[in-house]
Image (cartoon, rainbow, N blue to C red; front, top):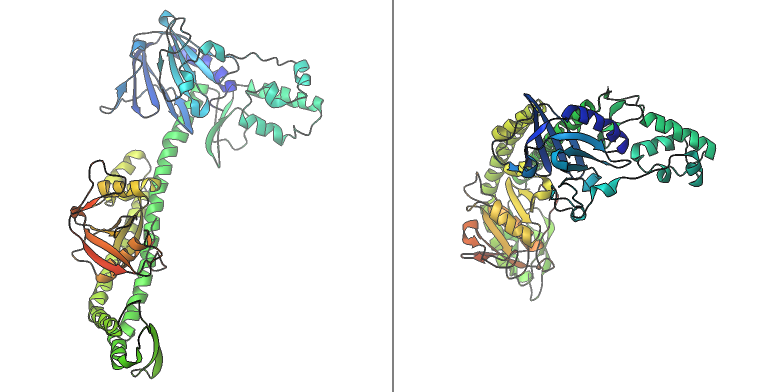
Length: 526
């Protein structure tokens, strides 16, 4: 209710007493959608702080404020040097004005997401300066037309058949909910009038409470049994609301978002360690692929023309085994591939062990970071924590702003662009020149990047899995086998004026893979 008329009619007399005779000495903005006005009366200073970000409309009147040394811009400079003569609420409206010397007017229009601050010349029918120019409807707004006349008599109430919103449209969400709890909609007309009189009496009582519910902290003029604080001074109530709802609220929100990201990362590390340990155990206990290759080579005669699947006897186990070939694949080529895989088996084994070690170190680091973050209690500490503890800067980005999905294969982060425009943003703002870049060959698709930070080489299994993702997130998705190009990111460049997602590749290699999307083993981060 801090932008409700019934609160403003108490606030404005208090502002009139506080600021009358003050001279405006500066007006500036250092945060988007926030305007700061500095005033002085002799040695006494005053500040007016209006934060008009949509969904976060708050304002306060602190005695002290420190202007930033950088990134602030002067606004409404014609107002500097003028004296505040009075502060008045506009009748039955969510707006109030400061009358300034030389008949200038400063209007605070508190219309939720369309809130604004407007400066008028003497006798001006339209504002000379507007804080938020994006609100086009304010360009021709005459502040005098905002005032509303309401007939609050019983006769008028009866004419409207007790319709509360029509009788007193300034009630707002909280008072209407209060009337509903009192069974107002079902009550008789006489009972409704009694309830309405009680409501008006409550709203005319200068008692202001701060209340917290599922939607956050808000100000109420109604009786509250579980109020965080109660005030008789409307300025103090507003200042505390500004701090709790905006300053502390934003701190808690930012801290909790970062805490959740670290906890999610810890959860993924735990999951990856469990899966990798299982895979390592299976690798140690399973027969080498070379044995299956031996069976194939010993039975080449069983593969007739156009036969892509045969059942052979595995002479190592004495059990039948099914061999399925890819289209156009020869059995000896498949056997050769299995021999190579068997040769790389020890390398894969060592890579998984190294990754498990790295993930264990990451897990311990995350546990320490979470403990430190939980102990942070204010913005300055949070800023220092981010600077000192967070090395991966993508954690500091809002999840919705990241232009890519992220996966993890054997400890290697793999990024997949979300759209053509996101492909460009990922390449421009997040990719290092030594990262490996992949893309389905000659068709539209997502850019895929394997992050190489901390790695000197990349296992073939990781390259193949990233290529499978590149093929899956492309027009090759439905193909049985697809070509994917890969190269270091330093050989990929954006040509000036080219369409979104279009790049030039100066050097490339090609790998053939089956398009395969995310599965249970790769760790999906976003």
